[in-house]
Length: 123
Image (cartoon, rainbow, N blue to C red; front, side, top):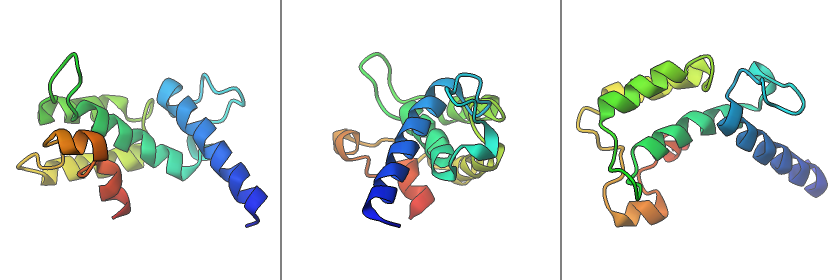
């Protein structure tokens, strides 16, 4: 892949990530009308990992959400907000995380995302 082609690929990924986070996997709000498998796989993975990270991180207006609520929200978003294949992987990860150790633990993680779900997907 040439430098120009890789830069173009990154631009497409960023654009689709932003769109997916806004309208979900169904594609109703995409400018190009893409949906499902037309959305780059990386984008579909990031969508569920980002949602998990957002729900399990402290916010100025709320504390970390309980794991059962996070699980419920991921389940509700399957087929609309998240691709089922990646949502199921996240649900399995949640089920295996009996100590809720994937969530944000300290102010360090708030800045560095030390334990983020995205790192768990990619190792």
